Length: 120
Length: 106
Image (cartoon, rainbow over all chains, first blue to last red; front, side, top):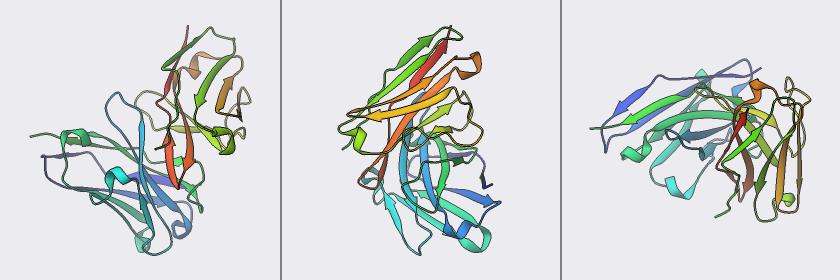
């Protein structure tokens, strides 16, 4: 059974960048699509994009194009989500999630979430 | 862009059946799934591919999807089912979530 463990909470100033990590265990990380979803305080779920197990393959929602980068380091079974030019609207809990080896699978495994607070 | 619409809230008495709808253009032509989220916790998948239950999800959870509407049905609702529920589907390689429905068990 895959488990996803995310990095700790972050506080950033407006205009800064944040990089959230997501370490997988219990399954071969190499074949997993990794998705990132966020949830602003009191709001619903918002999908940001996915990172493919195939080298360099990513797909981001248009809203975040140019501001988000999703990468992975297979040697340590860890995925990363880098979000730049932060504003207060980016204050949210960020989740990594996976459905397995296809990008269109439902997300049956979620990380515990990483709280990112953007404040001056 | 594709949109999924859910009622903001649904109330149900313990032991009764709760139905939560999710509407989207030709949603029945796509696979829908449902997530349960309790306060302070990560979402949990309760239904995938319209009507399949992941291992460990009670049989009282069921799903259907036809036309423009997917429905999550909880039979014999229990206090522990009180949570937010989100539908999700795929459109043009992007995951789309509904706005969420708060299920209250009165």
